Image 1 (spheres, rainbow, N blue to C red):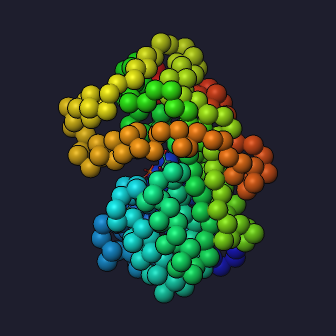
Image 2: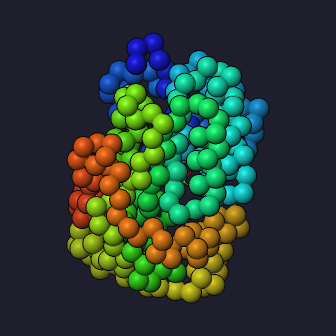
Length: 274
Ligand SMILES: NC(=O)c1ccc[n+]([C@@H]2O[C@H](COP(=O)([O-])OP(=O)(O)OC[C@H]3O[C@@H](n4cnc5c(N)ncnc54)[C@H](OP(=O)(O)O)[C@@H]3O)[C@@H](O)[C@H]2O)c1
């Protein structure tokens, strides 16, 4: 890994930020790339892609807004083509489970000819603390259009560890790892764990998709974000992703972090306090 530079696309995000810290700890050369970096990288402005990739040997790619959008696979294919032209040898793609757009994006990466590692991840635990669910949890009530479906929430720390392994160990090239937590919980159970860890009551209520969308709209959530969440809750969360997979053990050699540990550690930071 000497004389190599790793570019992290989405390097300030939930996974990218953790990967950057781990790579820097090892003394490896890291370059974050997103709309706020210099040079900037914007998924919606392809003229920015080349300068962000130039000089790197490998890249971690967290797509925005989500690989389920219609143009994602084509964009991933084009990014890989430019990456190869810039001399990159390896791309680690953060993918999602049970989404047609994510599957097509994985295929575009594989077809590009560049060495790849695909990290196909379940829902992040950190959606409850670093995403859209944080505010309602602090307010004491989370309403989602999700009932009995179970999700094996994964800790973003495990994704970062897996990405670190993929970026630094050639044995993980041209492989796909399906990364999930060690057990599947309903959203109600996940919120109950967060409430217990925080030592305060937090309600969970299942609402209809229409009420969910109307609620988001009322607080000014942009239309495309609402459409994305409707797709995630309406189609992907139908039980297809409930199975626990062994990808974390396969790549890291130890089991995935449990949701209870995530809830305890995160509650201790005080982030869910009223
Ligand atoms: N959350 C989940 O449960 C889950 C599960 C499976 C897969 N995924 C996938 O994870 C990916 C997101 O990864 P993450 O959660 O680590 O990131 P994130 O926390 O959503 O972080 C967003 C990052 O993307 C950058 N960004 C936002 N819009 C951008 C744009 N138009 N062009 C370039 N950069 C942009 C932001 O920086 P700037 O503001 O500086 O641009 C920031 O670095 C998505 O592809 C999602 O599908 C998520």
